[in-house]
Length: 430
Image (cartoon, rainbow, N blue to C red; front, side, top):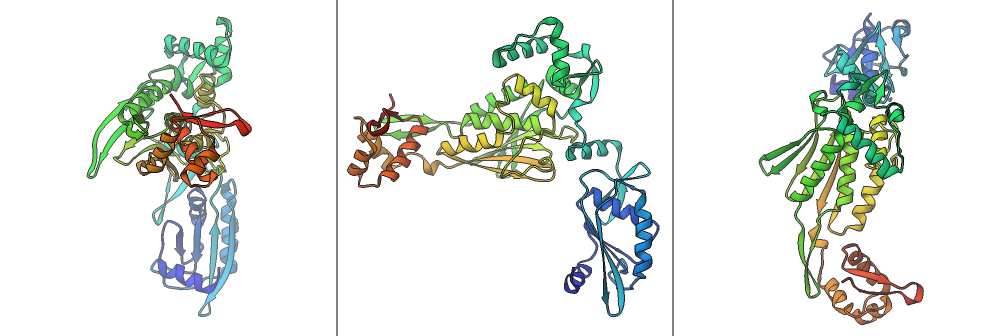
């Protein structure tokens, strides 16, 4: 940090990431731990709360700091720097965001505004889950007898159907333990989500669909039950709500889905598989006139890059159960599959937003890219089979331009490709 940046910070005043202290007092380790448990921050010793520069004994401040932070477990990452302003020495302490929660005597502190406060047990569990240091879905919570027998029967039928495995009666409990649904002879949170009416025990384990207008929500509908059931019902309801578009293709009027169904289904599955269930909020589907959004509580896991997502599941046992029942096709492929499905679909686009407390998938309409005059020319010409070079010649376009148009019409299910190599030709799909 240079002098100019330091002066700017002091003039900005205290904030969630900046603290002034006249001296390195006995509680400075509380401030350090709180910053480490939040987003990191800077402590400037030698500045009063009102921003007045008073200076400090830097050597003595460093000694107090070094001594006091020994009580923080695990040790936080800090850097110190001495800077002088008008012959007054200041100590700048830069605290990095910790990858695990730092505690003092068994108490965890976080930064709240310009102050520090201890966390409740529920908040600690929530943060550990968000950091990926504990797997909430593996915690045993409920008697095994509370599982619904018909849901367990459904599960093993799906395992047989989708994975080709027939599990004998005597091995079913062992199989559920290996999947993480049972631990210490009790249902885990994953088992509760899969084999009970989940919201009776985990109230936020639901999907809420909300119709949005210009002035806010117009209507809402909730889907409850085991997670696989909520996905099925929410998906069916969403497909019903999203109307098809009528387009004229050649001499025909056809209906085209505004959004790719497979991508929608995958986004819903990802939402229930990777959300943070310790946050008291449900998965939301927000339906707007020009788009819809699927928002789940909890940001991306540490180390996951939205541009190149790796499979680091927040809820590994839930993911195992969804995989065994065919809801998850390939680990770590969800976002890529959504992108690929949308790329093939000419009527919409997709955007991913990863915030600190929520992950949102946004599907947007793009009706302007539907069938246009050039597409109709191609469809009319393809009443008889033609090669791409023949189409290009008749239309006066380049072959590449024609092939892009044909690909779009193929994805819409209007044109089909026949033959291969030099014998490849295209025709109207009957």
